[in-house]
Amino acid sequence: MSAALTPRPARRVPRWADVEPFLHLRRPAADAVSRRLARAVSIDDVEAMARRRVPGAVWDYVHSGSDAEIAMARNREAFERVELRPTVFGAVATPDLTTTMLGRPAASPFVLAPTGYTRLSHHTGECAVAAAAADAGVPYTLSTYATTSIPDLAAAAPGGRNWYQLYLMRDRGVSLAHLEQARVHGYEAVMLTVDTVVTGMKRKDRRNGFAIPPELTPRTLAGLARHPGWVGGILTSEPLRFATFPEGSEHARWGVSNALREQAIRPEDIAWVKERSGLPVVVKGVLTTQDARVAVDAGADAVVLSNHGGRQLDRAPVPIELLPEVVDALGDRAEVYVDSGVRSGGDAAAALAMGARGVLVGRPYLYGLMLGGRRGVDAVLEILRSELERTMCLLGVPDVGSLGPQHVRLRGDS
Image (cartoon, rainbow, N blue to C red; front, top):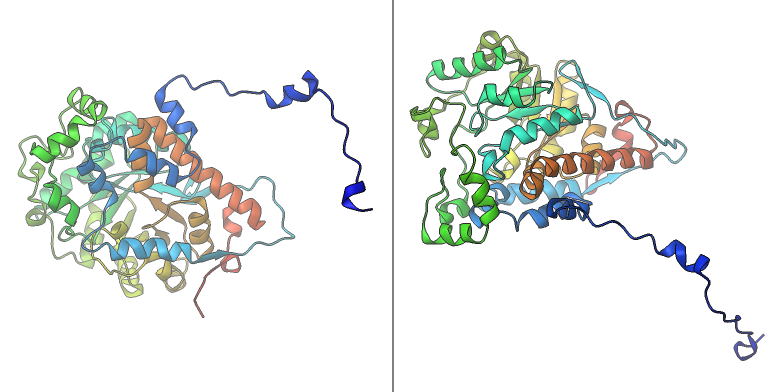
């Protein structure tokens, strides 16, 4: 039949029953934070909105990498090369995300990484992040350069899996005091960071004159004026300081950390930390198979393959690319974690399939903190959890232990 002779469908006036299904309007969110979080369906969304919530110097501190930011870019490029390979005959409706880390159960394979100066992102800082992690059933790691003290963090998340990140000091008495506080206040593990004998140079921080507390230059004053909410939160809460050190300690002064940190870390230091703390030791900042073996031989219970999110040695190796060979070299002698560039549940699935026990995330939860305080961190953790669950459904795997090399490859590898 020709188009000209095709009968037209009958026209009629729509009935209410036809229209009503389209008129289910969402109730407006009660407050601005809820409205922002309702629009966030990915970490990219959270990041884009978070940038508008803090002064430029704070954003640059969190977001930037060292030197030319080559390592930071390569971290993401590697994850973007990941190809996930589904098992089409293994349909799973509700995969099990639970796992064990350092011998204890976790609701999902995420660890919130240590980040210094967290209250810069939002005045609730480390306490909000630790509480969110506790409710999500995942570990949180408090930094040596935290803006919340070791006991105050424990009080904020008494039921949480709190780990303590240690920068080893030349004055071992300072480190001993930290280890004792962590032990007394119920921290589960010590994360010894070994890649920061000196601090990487972040060009944006240098240009901004970044410091804690913020230096009030004309440029920073202009940035503060554009963010009265952030300023109000900072001014009406405890003064910003490095809270793991006593007030007045030279270790709590901005700009002196390189001179005070241990700059010649040895394998024996791992055994020293383990003996003095009585806790499992996770060594973070490993970037070669040989160093991973040495760390485990010295007593490490786990290693974190990390280039510090591209914030230390620029052009450093990319952790996700090293993961299979390190896992193969260590076998069941120690757990292997990976960080630097993890931004989605798909990234986490790739790392788990390549042999990681868990993944560390840092910047994503800081973006959530900027956007909505504790609720923003909750939202980020839920985004990551739901993305991982959905990825596992589509891969056809019933639990995280079933993820394996058959499910992943890095495109471009032979």
